Image (tube, rainbow, N blue to C red; front, side, top):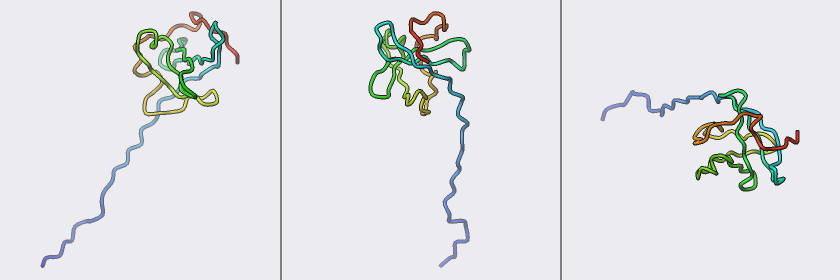
Length: 107
């Protein structure tokens, strides 16, 4: 019988990725007075994405939805909830200028 003298403890490597900064959101109303949020882009300053309410605290990009794709983010208490994807990833639309939006800001 031989004696095993190696390290028997399992090794685990933990990598912590730094989360990219998330832009601000402002509550707004559509021209038909539906609830929506305007997300200010971090990657393209001066541009925004518009998100309208889809389910409870899920909001989907208005322009992606018009193009036939659903890109959703979770927003609670006017704050984007961090997830595995950045809010600006996987859009098929381009952000629009703040002056080009058709909303009314509340705050």
